Image (tube, rainbow over all chains, first blue to last red; front, side):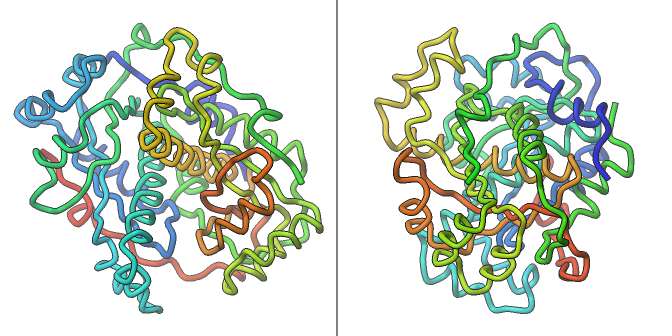
Length: 194
Length: 194
């Protein structure tokens, strides 16, 4: 069992980062469908530290604007949805539910360094699952790191104590805004077989 | 355009972390096919910091063994391939090729903190792309964090100066080794719509 050629194109080979969007909106049902796929992606000890804030309304987008780098502002303000991919640094409080057969909480409460690294690594994995899950349900994605994390944390995440990682615009891409495909490293440059 | 139900099951809904493997080997062509998909996944400024060391031979597996946590040792030694998902902390030296229209190298040579964070975040994204690309070509994956990164770096990555992030076993999974699906956070627990 493998994906067919159209599926490989949709997720990887023909998929592109989008910068321009059609007027077609993204529904709450679509956002829930994306989450209901990405949540199954693997994380260490099922710790699932990622949290997702979907900015869809005009007020939320305007609150985000001052945190964006100038090169990311216009396309992000125009995107139907911008997702703050964040993580909960106290993700371990959910472990009794998420990993019930072992008491894994002390692994992390005893080491803030390990907890932070685990939240960042696994929250990032889940951010990648979000990008591919969005493509899988027929949305286009535009992920980016160019923004002020501290401002986003203060504006949107302070109450929950979550921390922003990166942003992903979601919508239906307008092909005219897609850049030429940039080169990738060859197998021999990036890989070794031993 | 969206994946069909079988595709969504293959990548997300029915996909599971595997702990036991059939005798079917993984070919070099399959490893190259996985890389030729994952390389197209988006990274910040196309920086592509991930490096992948595929351990397939008996000698390589035995060199890995002392670095594994006891709970991960047997399944990893039995896996047809174990991938060290690593990153190159000097990834920015490739930027003139990967992101040729802007001189992006100084963004990172001026800040080791930003360079390390960028390598870790984007290398992790690429590790997630590897997991899903493996599933997309019909392989099963078993990712894990339980190992001694320092030992792996010394044993396998010292010459290149790469740094290990996490490990992924690859092969054809034996369903009898799959655990019961663990619970996931509900949309209301992990997500907000603003």
